[in-house]
Image 1 (spheres, rainbow, N blue to C red):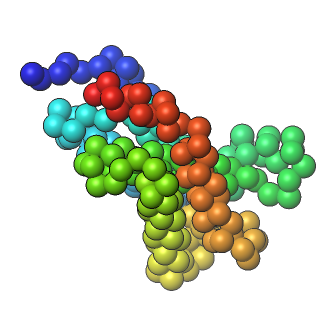
Image 2: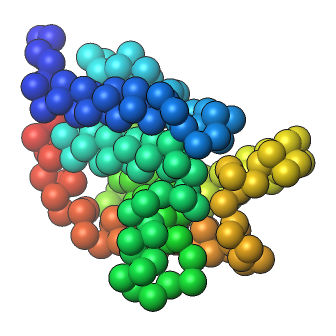
Length: 203
């Protein structure tokens, strides 16, 4: 039986589209905007196309929407200039705008749950320690791939990629970004696995 469209899912889609429109109106750097929101422009149509045939859990749709918003806000301002990041920098006494760290934490947190859902629903891996290990490996592979994309952008665009890279003078920025993704993936598994399991059973 064909399932109806969830109002909750429509609300999430409306929020993502609204933020996308806002972020694209007058971004700080148009090239950086395209680079930052590219995952959104790929993921949203893909999720819409598979909505009937492979419906995800409400939890996962919500997490993806949050990740989209993080990416689009970063695209609008560039990660090093997001106002909320400056507020955090002041509140926490940091030496740099930490919004990019939030982005890379999310880059581990949300993909971890995506990987977990696909692995469990496809019965590729049983629940247990091996599931967690494989999910973390996937998270780190995604993070490493993104860092390679940043490297490619730096080679292709030269100084034009500075806003996209957002290193803010940190020579260990790549390693720090991957570590934040690792923390995000681990945090997702530790905090959301039981909730996720309940939603998977309800599908």
